[in-house]
Length: 350
Image (cartoon, rainbow, N blue to C red; front, side, top):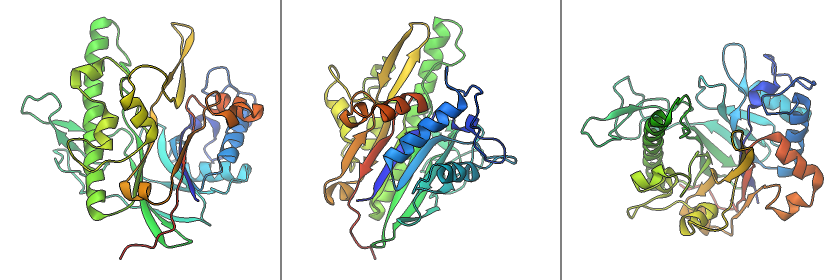
């Protein structure tokens, strides 16, 4: 079975020079108390153990006039001998955190193939292209706001070379809800509400695209970092739902499926799966969160028995019982990979 994964690598960009060469030195990385050579070595261990045929890399190295995401990722893959050694970039962004696909060209052919119409500054209401503008009334005042993605999702068309089967991947890094820049409690509340409104609008936009793919009968995987999940903050009560629930499907719409999301939706208290571990400096402790997902369409779920895995250094027994991998996962990023093993032994639709 091919393995497809998503992995948010914290400040991957800081580990490469402008030529895409790895900075394997003793300078500090952008991760707290981690040297660049330590983070690179840890990432090499994690990607090697993951051994995926396709990985959506969240916070991939920057792409601009001087730097190349593809060059950096392919250099990384060559250095560590990864099977997933070809890189694909969608729409570049201005955040130094691209969304890219690293894949095995012996297993998949892949192209960036976005849907939707281009928009001007006025935007469009119906699933415009992800580098455009979405008109959506977030505060129910009959005046639509103009919504954009700071990191436009990557839409990749994959062909499974063994059978000719094809599917779509949508790699996602939805806006954070953190009230960055707030200087007092009132600003914290105002920015938190504004950010959640924008995050929900982005998820409505994503769900419109999901509906398009499902109507076309295209096997679909939506994966990445949603910065959200059921019950993650008190502002969810204000809006009545999370962005993850919107993308999964509601109000009778055909649903996507992720077992970890469903577990969280059905259990608002008690033990929860987690895909990230963040350090709270003001409280001097770590918290865990479920923010990374691999959602699949019903046809993929019905085809064989998909197997999901969160590569958590403490919750996954194989990771925990492999000290080198356990330590690498903690050093490499504040997120952990999420993978799915899928049966793609079906022919390409007519």
